[in-house]
Image 1 (spheres, helix red, strand yellow):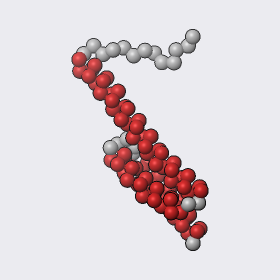
Image 2: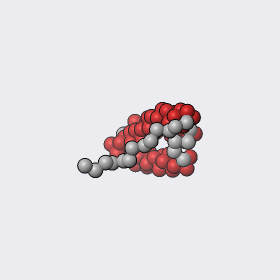
Image 3: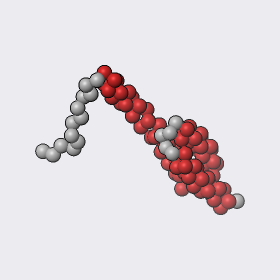
Image 4: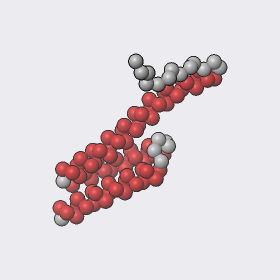
Length: 100
């Protein structure tokens, strides 16, 4: 039987135990926000792929606020957020010009 990860030892100091507890909570919060970010980006990409200009524009506006909030919290780097917004903006604009 192969174990996947070595078992972590419990910290001895009270401050270390508290830090471990805080890390669990922080990791859960960050994972949730990361998922929200990816879902928002994916929804815009789906709308663009479907060719729905109105829905893509609406979802893009919502996605921008989610991306900015998560970049401000430091979950993703600000440059990654800017890059994702730029690429999706180009796709939405291309969709709008193709429909016109």
